[in-house]
Image (cartoon, rainbow, N blue to C red; front, side):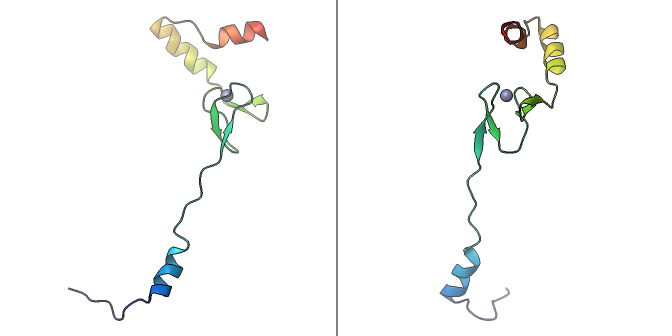
Length: 81
Ligand SMILES: [Zn+2]
């Protein structure tokens, strides 16, 4: 069984571990649907980023809802706006 060449000092080990911590993830809210979003990422729920649609979820959702026989959730929102 291999053995370490020399004992690592308390200081040396602690110095190495000083970079082991992780920063908490920054969570923001979508301006459109108020869902939690990652900073600098498009909203995973509605596909909005910086006030405009960047990912078209509507077609995918519409197809899925048509298949299952449910109403589209964005239909009510678009009528109001
Ligand atoms: Zn959103």
